Length: 295
Ligand SMILES: Nc1ncnc2c1ncn2[C@@H]1O[C@H](COP(=O)(O)OP(=O)(O)OP(=O)(O)O)[C@@H](O)[C@H]1O
Image 1 (cartoon, rainbow, N blue to C red):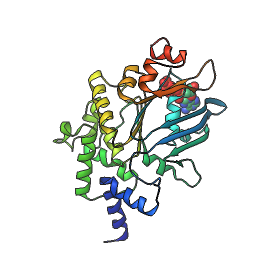
Image 2: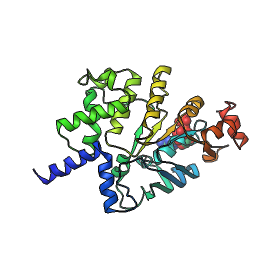
Image 3: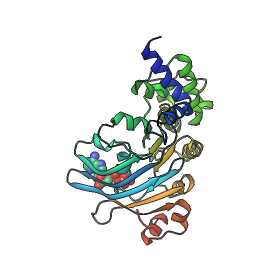
Image 4: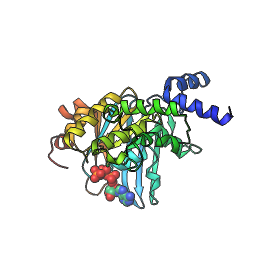
């Protein structure tokens, strides 16, 4: 067996058994390391962001604890999606975009010089507003597509196990197990979104970012995704942008309320436990927003 195959097999084993990698990492580097595969705490420290000269975020600091769901709420244009995209280095894909501040994944700055962008993206996955499976690709290949993009090769048996595991976690296995070779594009919108979640999980992210994942879905599919979010909290830290206050209340442990007032950059007005944000907010602007008085 070649060295390449050994490395590949190890990576696949790590994907299938996250504790294996963590034990190895912890043995090598006491105190933990960025390369682990367990849910991580994500911390934004004084994040400001620009598109060209237009400052869209100002001094945003927020801790998103491991194994918790954090909801980002606020009216349109206040910078929630920009903030989310900063959390996995997607903001820098826009030519005019810039930022200041730090994003710490279990204490390690993903923007440190020398940290590869692909490393951050693999550990911090993203599910988008509109389900975006590869439509002509089979359900099975959609799930394993992330492996290929991350340069991870796997044998058939390992892939089979991984596909089943990820589809189970995404709550889709029972619906598709008899038609894994059918195209991803043939699924319903809600099923496609769960397929995208399964695809994200296949590279064993430590954090999953979700940008309005239910806004294109009907109420039943929305419920199903919310159940999936609940079931995933032991697997991955979740940060979700949502305009739906009931959804924020149902799925999140904590909320951060963003606002961009009168042409000023977006900032966090208030954040805290979801119960407190909805039932006992400290800022009158939060009270108005969560009660649907604006936005
Ligand atoms: N690619 C871009 N180029 C230039 N400006 C942008 C770009 N993307 C977002 N903006 C601007 O940044 C600000 C924040 O936008 P962002 O999409 O982050 O807000 P949001 O709170 O997520 O809004 P929504 O809830 O409507 O999705 C807005 O003023 C928007 O016009």
